[in-house]
Length: 376
Ligand code: AOF
Ligand code: ZN
Image (cartoon, rainbow, N blue to C red; front, side):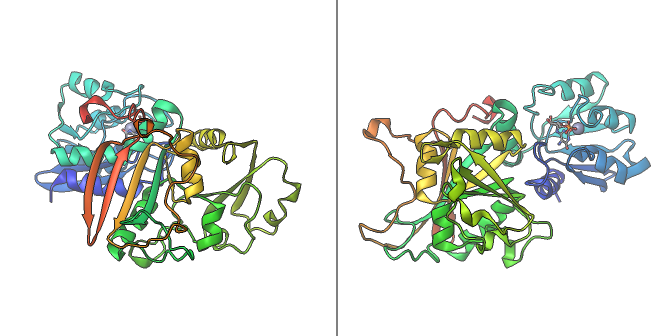
């Protein structure tokens, strides 16, 4: 197997589990054989390289390291991985991408080179892109102290997310829905508004292959319930894993927010455009070390976030079905744009087929400053 491919697979096990750290994978190869593998653990556990070195033991000497991210060269919560690699006598290092953390930013590679180690970035374009995708939330958090906020929705070809009676199960095919579950498992948080919970009563857990994950994922499920409308019986509260309910100040009448299990935390924020102060909410998530948050609806919450300029990236799943009806809701409400020339036209757009459906992704203009030039 391609070693960088394996390193990326290892890194994906850490995705959604280790923020504010980036998920990284590392493989050590000697005489054509893998002698050590590792991925990032939650702080203050070891980084990927150190996990792999521990597994390899003495066999690390003279081995070739493949990492999905430049090894760190600073004392954070753990000592530098560059020192660990040098002390273990690793012969060469291949790193897919540079670490955007300003404390590293090429210093890890320079340090290894100056110690006489051959360092290459002989990763294919595809590997580089995947390595980048894995740490995108980390890069955003490092540069802006805010998470990458992704609006995700599934809609019909005529731009509806449900019928006029509220029926929405299912618009997209199983292939597309499976991808959503795998993506949920790799996000740090998922967020919805109260309308979505009232309409669909979702669990909001990741169930790749139809099964819940061993460790509850995503790590945090956030409900924006401005006026405290959601009853304690909502399914999302009773699944394993942390839940954050956000509601607006003035809530003596936020009665239903009692009788909830211990995994549910309540956060009161000042009221603001569209409900609670969403800028404060996104900042709060950043300060909790959340690197990626997927907003899964509904249209009101996504619309308010877009109006406020808080959405970075859109992931639209489009199914070839026509729902019709003026009353049937669309994915983005809010105030919207008055003039078409002012509407955010997405950049870096990609299109992908998922069975009968199409996934279109893109970035909101002005929200790409976390992406390095080399990935432009
Ligand atoms: C690596 N390998 O597996 C990871 C790296 O303060 P700490 O110990 O939590 O370190 C976090 C920083 O280390 C993070 O900002 C990033 O620069 C780097 N992450 N580096 O060599 C890894 N996760
Ligand atoms: Zn490190």
